[in-house]
Length: 378
Ligand SMILES: Cc1ncc(COP(=O)(O)O)c(C=O)c1O
Image 1 (tube, protein in one colour):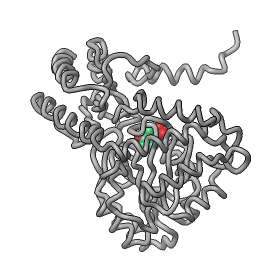
Image 2 (image 1 turned 135 degrees about the vertical axis):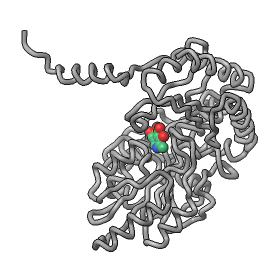
Image 3 (image 1 turned 60 degrees about the vertical axis):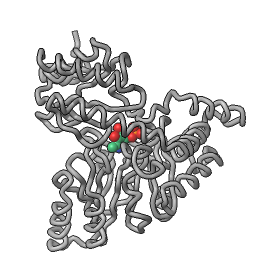
Image 4 (image 1 turned 120 degrees about the horizontal axis):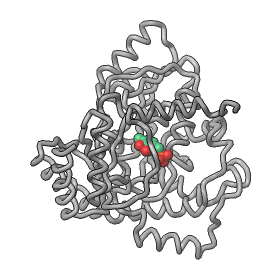
């Protein structure tokens, strides 16, 4: 028999299994402690109604082409104008996903001779964008503004003459902690750098009208923010916000933007409605913050630390034990997922408990009770 053309893939999967790292798609069951649907908008009546209204207006399901060709629809532009006003930026550009937006941003904007200094915990999509780009890249210690400053200063002393880029998340997706944005903005100003803030997990949840954590920095010529629409906004897609030149440059040079079918005009409409809902109904975020405090109290009783946000990591360390605890919780009716390397650093496998409005205090109480049992038994 000939050798399977997939024998190396098989070996790789076997090695992942041996390290308790092989993944498989699992259906969604049980109370939601795993999604990023923080404000419970994804399945909400409000967004369902907005969808029906969009259909009634005759919006097409598909865009029919890329933005630079026939795919550009007035709903894309209406959303971008709305988003720029909402997030306080000069311009915005809509992408089908946050991954595509980060890929386009980091592959396109930093130029040869520039240096991207990124937090060591930055999302995979930023890494993949950087790999496609031409600038140098180096990681800085997590949330250490001084480390960013030192790296850029050293690079300058060594003859670096391009633009430094500082890439961070405002709220880290697997740790739930916040970046020191004011300090990082000061570093950016000191070094004529651009600060790129991925607000994926802060959008809709933080800021007076859900504008995120970077909103406090005000409009700046050297600030770019990314607001994904598939998490608290309950839809999909992403809005890249910043100076008009950034939008114009990506429209002209950003291959993931140029050579890709534009998102559905219906989605663009839905996202605009989601932004309105979040801005007009601040009680949703307020309720979530109340639930977060409730969960923190229950977890503290188990000796588990809070992260200060809706993303609460319970670091277990061992991959197998993490997945056994997650499986026990799932069997008890709670959808808590285990997160293993390479999504998180080696040796820091964890349960990522997400608090959303899809659950209430009673489910949180029951889940933390089951967690105590599962941790004792695993
Ligand atoms: C910090 C961060 N950035 C970007 C993305 C990608 O966004 P999307 O899911 O819209 O592709 C994610 C998704 O998990 C994320 O957590």
